[in-house]
Structure formats: C-alpha cells, structure tokens
Image 1 (spheres, chains in turn orange, cyan):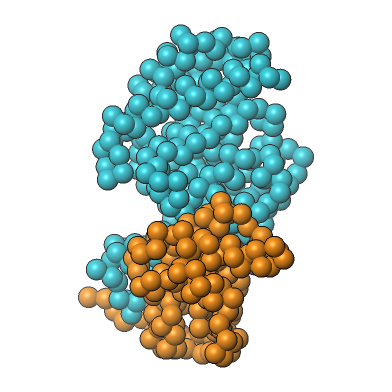
Image 2 (cartoon, rainbow over the protein chains, first blue to last red):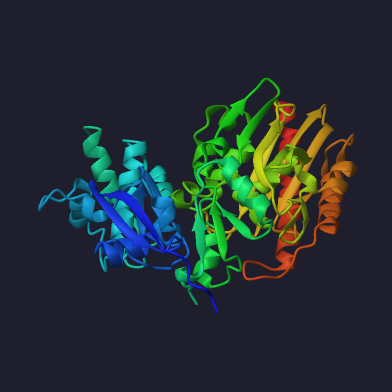
Length: 162
Length: 292
C-alpha cells in the first residue's frame, strides 16, 4: 500500500485575490480550483491534456490545469473563466460567444474563451488560421467550431478598429 | 484509474544544484518532472511507477537559450513556446521550431519542454528527428560533473537512454554548420492539429549540379527510437538526383526502418509514407538547387 505523504501549503493568486491552500503536492491544480476554491468553471474532460476544457492561465500562459501539480502553481498568478467578467458585465469574448452561438453544452466554453483570451494577448489581430491554431488544443463536440472562430474574430476585429 | 495524490511525494528545491544533490543522494529514487505533459498523463492513467518526484519546472538555469558564433545552446527546460518565440532559432533552425509548432496545442507547448521530450524518449516525438539531423549534442549534468554526448547515441532502446540515475540533461547544443542547407520537415498524422505522428521526418542537405553533396535524414515513429537513416544517406551521397536514385532511396529507407502496427497506424502504411517522404525530400533538394 502507498504510504501517505505530507501535505504542503501553497500560496497563489487566483483571479486577482491571494489564496492559500493545504494540499498534497501532486494534487492537480484543476482539483484544487474546483474542490477547494469552489471555482468550477474549469472542467475535467479527458484528464490527460488533450481536450483543453480545464484550460486556465498560469502567469499569463495557457495551461491544462489537469497536468499541473499544485506545488508547481505555488507563487503563480492564476486566471480562470470566473476572473474574466467584471461583476455582471461579461468580458467581450464571453459576449461574442453568446452573440455568435459559440457555446452550446458549455463544457468546452471556459477553456475555449481562455485560449482565445491568451491568443488575443499575444496577437491582437489574428487571422482565421491563427485563431484555429490558437484554439487547436480545445475540443468542442457541439458547435463545429465555425461560430467559435467567428466569435474570436469578431472581438479581434473590434480591437483592430475594423 | 487515477492515482491518489496522497501516495506521491513532490518537492521543488528551486535550484539546479539542489535538484542534483537530491538525485545524487538517492539515485533512481526521484523522477524529475518539468511541465508534466508526459508525467502527469501517466499519473492520471495510474501508470506512474515513481512515487517520489522532483520538480525541475522553470529552473532559471535550464531555461536559457544562448547563441554563439558556431552553435545555439538550448536549456533543457525551455518549453516549445520558448523555442517558437526565439528569433534566431526560428531563422536558423526551422526544423526544430516547426516541430515545436506541431507538438500538441498551445497549452501543451507552454508546458512541454525539449529536455522532457528527449528523456521521455517517445519514438513519435516530433522534435527528435530535427535534433538527429542537426547532429545535436547534449550536456548531461550531475554532482559528479558534466559530460557532452552525441544525441544520436542517447537513445539506447525503446524508452531507454544513456542518462545515469543521478543525471539531468542541462543543455541541447545545435551546431550552425548546416546553415545554408535545404531544410525539409513534415509530420503525417490523422489530423493537422493535436495528433501524434504516424510518421514524421526531418532532412537537411546540399546539392550541387544535381549531385547530393551532403545530406542528413531522420524519421520518427518508424522504429523503437527516433532514427537517423544512415544507409539511405550513404547511398544517395555523391549521386545525381533523378528518378532512379529516388526509387533506390525509397527502397533503402524502407529496408532501414522498423515500423510497427499500433493504435495510430500500420507498419505497411508507415513504410509507404516513409519512402514517399524521403522521395519528396530528395526532389525538393534537387529543385532547391536548380533555383539557386
């Protein structure tokens, strides 16, 4: 049988607020967000880094939170989908997903939007190929992707003033 | 079935020196984990045999890229995103940066590291053929010191490497002596995004008046290790590129590889594609020279 290992203290910033958690160091960032911090926006899809539904930003970089042991998140700045809206005001990407029909069942949507957010942080006016590449790690079984790409391009277009 | 995190130890000593000390005190007991894109997948599947892990993620000593006149030295902890974003790598080593772009999606490129990919030793890894054709060298480090080894000798069998139990890869060194050569790479997978390769190829070469002056070819996913096609290279070197040579090169390449049937493809398909990729490379090599 496995011997039980010691838990550790992990401090991190989540959606702009400091958080301290007590966890086994190999616990997944995804589980800590969902079960300890009550942030259930990040979803577990495949649990092996293929589907992107658990995507969050860690120090500004898009990561699959199912592949991040919580110890490696110590001292980092995490942004989840819950951190994008300001009160009742949706983030532009969230509004665009609604307007374009980019969300159906909603499982992939938090990860999709964070991947799109990450893409637009790196490149403010991506073309359709760049949008596809930026979202290639996020799988959607409902929409067929077209409306998702349209939503991202709409936000990118409004940024470039087109 | 998923593993119980309570059964695993993970420490993050925070410096290369401290990690090496830990590895030397109990050689083989600690498994280094970088961005977790392989280790955490095994953890999720319940197949991770190591119970003690040491984090090498984001160690500053492993995350530098140094450029000198004759080589580029890439810290083993550099992510695929680090590689893609590095200007002189992109310009001078497009085989590697293309492979970085083909490896997983953006989230995995933000976490997966070159050193991790080498140590994980998957014969299907997209970046490894690029390292083979560039005749990369690895600097391995432990408390005992450093040694520089040829990458081509690093993989000793399926998922087996030369790395000693107390060692880490510190640096991947790429020589600039192939600058000006034609670079060719392609990945053949089930889809263009997020697919593990059925076959991937990297090639570099130089032709003068249609004759192959120098050439390196390597394939992934066709043998227990990423494979340099030494016999095919030897056969085409000094020869004029034409239909007869292309046909013989295809045959030699197919004899030289050892593909298998698995969930992603069949041995027969891999052999056919490998031959065609080698042929396409040689044709591009001939064409590149005509234009020059």
